[in-house]
Length: 335
Ligand code: ASP
Image (tube, rainbow, N blue to C red; front, side, top):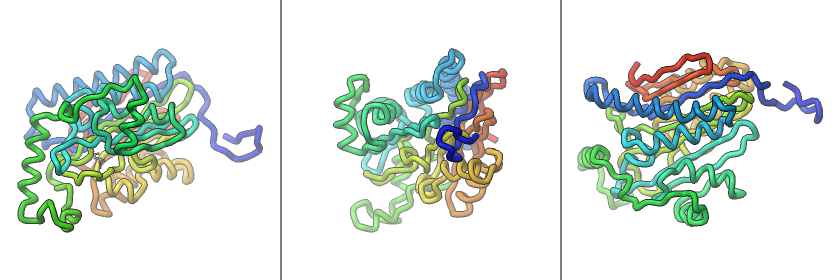
């Protein structure tokens, strides 16, 4: 649509259509089907359902896409089943550094935090950066000091994020690393932080379309097991792990370095915007083509202004859930 007031060919938000949609993910780093118990599968899907419920409550009452995204992600952060908030993976030093971002496609405003260690819900910190600062991204110590000024952000000790499963994954990871390189010399920066056969990845995210036709997206993560401290992945990087504009929104999950290098989330939406590609084609091109061709892997969830939902992944599974105002709804983990 052309903006008549300015005469410029600016893209404008889709007209209000009175319909809504929501898609969430809990990471593309699922265990292989034979390594996940029936109870774990059921519990994982139940949390995805709760996240859908939280987001839908906002959307069906006419609330904003950005609030729905935030509500869904808080549920996923609170669950130990996902690598974000409680249950976040450990870095190489045995601590947690959390990344998150959120973007409102209505005006392309955005907020992000990287490497936070005491904020219980990093997505709320990202939202606070967006709403209560002039910045888009705050990292490390500066982000913690910003959080000190936001009384609504709950703070916890870094060990609060610990879970036995993540501890086990770190130990396994460190064992595998032995013999490849020490953790103290300069060579440690060359040690890969991922083994493509193992489920070290797994992040949470949500993308929503509200009844006013606005799209928002958000992503939150503990990063990757055994990551070097100070490493920042794609999740808090606007354009890499998260993107929302008037026509398209994406939240990614996968080997973050590749998502940063190929500006994955933005690239999908740029293809929708510039080439006029259907979002399914654009998302497949990047997630099933560009990223694996370069040596990475992962997935993404997204939707367009018509409420078309996409959920491609190149891994063995991706925790995911979706719903539309026409009643279409579901959750899935494997192919
Ligand atoms: N993309 C995240 C990162 O690289 C990891 C993930 O999605 O699981 O930090």
